[in-house]
Length: 165
Ligand SMILES: NC(=O)c1ccc[n+]([C@@H]2O[C@H](COP(=O)([O-])OP(=O)(O)OC[C@H]3O[C@@H](n4cnc5c(N)ncnc54)[C@H](OP(=O)(O)O)[C@@H]3O)[C@@H](O)[C@H]2O)c1
Image (cartoon, rainbow, N blue to C red; front, side, top):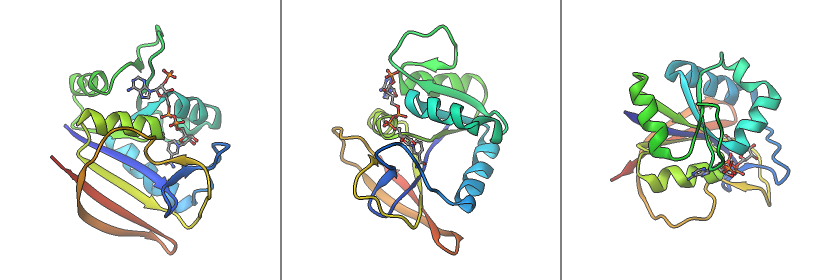
């Protein structure tokens, strides 16, 4: 199982404004959408799930198999309470790749769990002085290898990193 953490962010490390708004470009969405459709699954934090559901994003992505990380009890089987449970379920479903798409708390939980193999970051041309950080504060310290720099539009590059284990 190859687990990719995929986010759009500002060059100064924010994935959303303080009020959760995101101004990302259509080209960025198209690129993300192509990857999401290829992989066929998404792992999101409970807060991101609520925002994306309200915006109709899952329908736009063709309703990929989605798992929601939450500590709360929930009878809905898409709600899972650990990164390990998410990866185990996706393996059982026969997926060979997993796509973790945030937000910041979920990203930190996943890199701490050791399941993330690659981090793909679409660097968008905006700067916010405050906002939601790519990784919520947590205890981890990782070394990366730069795998690829991909230009996905006039204004946006994607950095692909491998987490060295
Ligand atoms: N730029 C991008 O590509 C991108 C992508 C996605 C999201 N975003 C932005 O990110 C923001 C949301 O990020 P966020 O950090 O506030 O929230 P989040 O990561 O989306 O969701 C946080 C919730 O996930 C659950 N969770 C996290 N770690 C867990 C663990 N180890 N075990 C069990 N449950 C866990 C908890 O749910 P419970 O409270 O239910 O227990 C927690 O409250 C929004 O502004 C959104 O727009 C940006």
